[in-house]
Length: 141
Length: 106
Image (cartoon, rainbow over all chains, first blue to last red; front, side, top):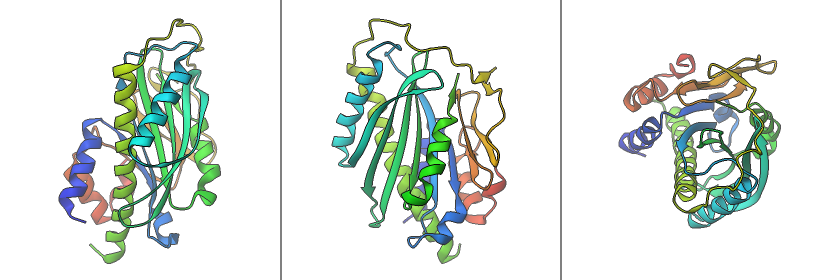
């Protein structure tokens, strides 16, 4: 794992002005030394909130997940901070062979932005409540 | 950088990569192909923020992470570290992570 690769990844997140969070202590308890983590950023979209926007988001996300070959566990419509959104849960295997569970919240804001909050762990049982609690606090403006 | 630190770093990298890939695709698809919704009235006003910052306190044992510039906030457990990558370069983020100084870099 080269530092240039890490730099590329962080640069990509930086270009999106992302927020990156992590429970560094979780890596100590992890058999894979995996730090449970998350990120958040928003991008403009042509979508506007409406009665069909959650369904449209759900359909689009399912198609995108298929492209990157993740195993989708659930995709549900959600109201997030009063906005239409989607909560997705999926699993994937890292290049290092570590099984990762992701929970991703997608929010369509009133000013036509899509905000993503993505949480990743190798210990979904331990972090399920934490992820749900974090999801319940998402605020967009 | 210790072996343990390398392993932790690797774990984070993988997760971020996965998240970024899925996010990028999800973000691009609706922009390109989804029809606008016929109504623009279903979303109730977002009342959780004031001037782009959450007005209410986070849950006990949690603190806010986010960005007024991005317009997205969420509460994380107090023990978690947070980085605003709009305010720190990728190189600095790597440096802080490698040195163990990241926890304070919120």
